[in-house]
Amino acid sequence: MKILLSAITAFMLTTNTSAQQYTTLVWADEFNTDGKPDSKTWNYEEGFVRNHEDQWYQSDNAYQKDGLLIIECRKEQQPRPNPWYDATSNHWSKSRKEIKYTSACLTTRRKFDFLYGRLEVRARIPVAYGAWPAIWTLGNKMEWPSCGEIDLMEFYRTDGKPYILANYAWGNERHYNAEWNSKKIPYEHFLEKDPFWATRFHTWRMDWDKDTIRIYLDDELLNEVAQSTTINGSIGKHISPFTQPHYILLNLALGGDNGGNIDDTAFPMRYEIDYVRVYK
Image (tube, rainbow, N blue to C red; front, top):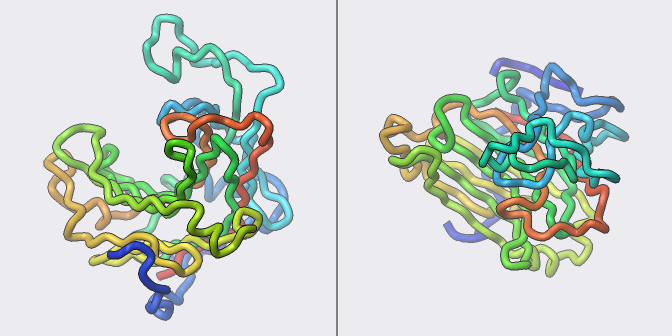
């Protein structure tokens, strides 16, 4: 059910002490109706989009059931032709002959964005080899990364070791090249607290104001950044991209630059989202 009530550092330091600062719910999707996600709220990316990822994005891989949004990554029983294939192209998205895996990426671009406040997402993520789920935002002005990127959550493996990440990216003097403030927390840290961590739902949260952005997981501070340190280069007009509205993205990627080797026995992989809420 969509709700629209108005238009709108250390590593793992503390639990949040500012809960009462964000008490007014301004937008939410609770995914309470079985079927397709609300087309008034969500868009879908299509095709091979970024990071040399192995999945083809399509709307068929996203559905609502039992109060959840489910993004399902599937292995094709028989690889099918890539409609973008071009034998003369050197671009990775066009040089692949086949689609072997499918998934979905949902965004609120041009349908909902917000500036400052709290974004909260409760979800259960897949942690199999090759899985690369994410919760993130992008600014709706300027090219990436001068538009700004906030990664509330990424999960993937580096050199075979799994991590949960919380990141911020902004622009410099080179096109499509980012400055990063990134924290990679070993997945083992969460397993030490709960061996059954992957079977449970968890809450990711971003608290964002004109001075600071903080990312939490189950009330544990993962990363924070001061707005004064996130200034774009000349391409981004020497401003912080986090002083403009951002829209929301939810996706389950596979393989590619960061996902690593894919466990073909783990399909279908399901990324389950209980709700997405924005407070002011």
